[in-house]
Image (cartoon, rainbow, N blue to C red; front, side, top):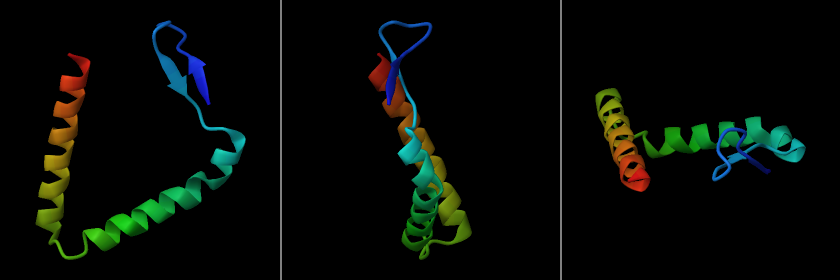
Length: 67
């Protein structure tokens, strides 16, 4: 559900509906299971490095998007 942002009329905030709240935990668990499966062939160090690289890439995408 989208609502007007209280401090910025140009922005919208997104809120879960009641039906979405009821499946939130199951969706989270499914995502965690998929993450475990796709990262299974990486060592713990490789997984940590991958996640750090992804954080950096996502941070850069946000910077570019906001400019």
